[in-house]
Length: 220
Image (cartoon, one colour):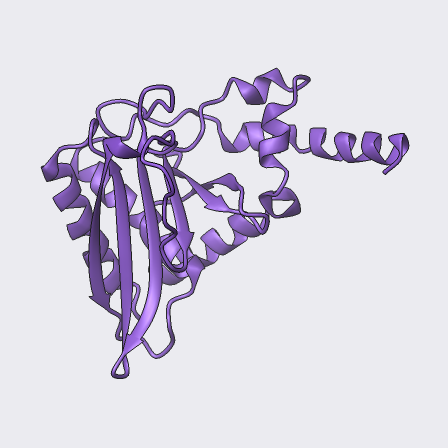
């Protein structure tokens, strides 16, 4: 790769910075008692809970649908605690390269319209979100580097194993959904990884209750 090509690629990434700054503005309210800090919170600081929910729809839920369910669940959980946020929920999702990028999603609305808006906002990410990490590390983009990232992460597919309990914990909550079928019955298996230092058991129980209630509301 020659210098001109590298310069062009760098310019293309820098051009995305205003978009990412806008996505991360305004800063979210704290999700839990404080933000997770990767300098002091590690995987061993977390606990994992799971749910298995029957999906009675004619078609299996897509990753977009499940992401919309998560956004709506966050909205319901926060409203229940009188901590609703008009600017929506900020969620990290995976790009095609496996890196995370943030999307700011609405947290209320009819299931169909909410799912469509989630699809639109995910599709709006420049280059599928693959350049976010590079843009954030760019020393010429201090405005983006100063922004706080998402506190919640989402992924769709089989749960990935974590190799080292001492790895830094990067999110307060990570939600992983996998759609399976057993004897012709479609199930949504969901794993929640919580930072146990910032959530109570009541927080966890209430969130899972809202998740299952919201999931059933999206069945079509």
